[in-house]
Image 1 (cartoon, rainbow, N blue to C red):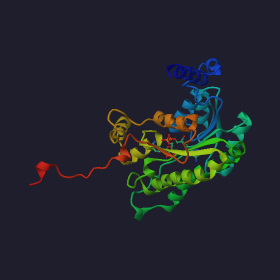
Image 2 (tube, rainbow, N blue to C red):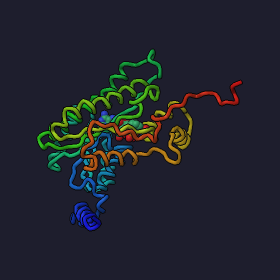
Image 3 (cartoon, rainbow, N blue to C red):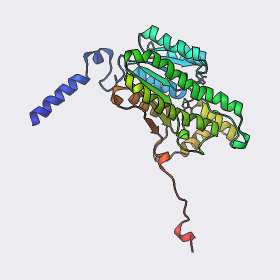
Image 4 (cartoon, helix red, strand yellow):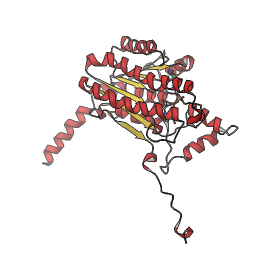
Length: 298
Ligand SMILES: NC(=O)c1ccc[n+]([C@@H]2O[C@H](COP(=O)([O-])OP(=O)(O)OC[C@H]3O[C@@H](n4cnc5c(N)ncnc54)[C@H](O)[C@@H]3O)[C@@H](O)[C@H]2O)c1
């Protein structure tokens, strides 16, 4: 028995550590996306940028798509020769179609589509004051943009019978009361999109998943917080965001989402589809009854 186990281990190690891993300077664990090509929307900063960097350090070639042209180009330069920037506004279907075609013409294939671009909504909290023009604008980016990304990625993935599609949802798409209705609804919709599209695309060998992050002090969250706490220092805003988490000893960071995306994009998740990977340190699992303390009840 012991000998059989040993042989198995030897085979396992050989299978994982291919000679090309050594050639490219990656460890077996690091090259989880070797030979893969990814397109990431909203990749000029925040979660998208962190994920682009993670994918590249794991052997992928990445096309970064964003509306911020200069920043996007600078970030692509910073990330090195395996990063390319393309201007893309996810509200324009032709831009998304063009970004997908550009990726395929440059790298011959598209293995991973990460529809990550999203915006916050700066509206009053009550339904009575709901601004439907803002609602349409946010849904256009956060929902229609995601759907258009999946549509055009599927167009090139279906003939190859393989692919991994990711979206960024949110914990605000799991529970009410965590954000303005418009933003929250847009993220509920993203989780729904993943279920609908995973159901169709599984027959083509394509996996569809999303990630629901906890609050992370990226640029758009800080901008939102500035409106609530005008005059507060950025450090204070970051402290407030971090302080709202529940997991002792850790804060949610873009790299935590990049790690989740790496898992879902890689063959480690080869049988995972239709899943919403919640990265919230247990926040949405926790609810207290707020009973008064025993010594307060007589
Ligand atoms: N930061 C958080 O706390 C948090 C939590 C849950 C979910 N999310 C989601 O994560 C995603 C990324 O957010 P982030 O925190 O990295 O924010 P971010 O503002 O740092 O990055 C968002 C990027 O999307 C780009 N973008 C905006 N509109 C676009 C459009 N029409 N077309 C193409 N690109 C566009 C921006 O230019 C920016 O580079 C969003 O979908 C957001 O809703 C963020």
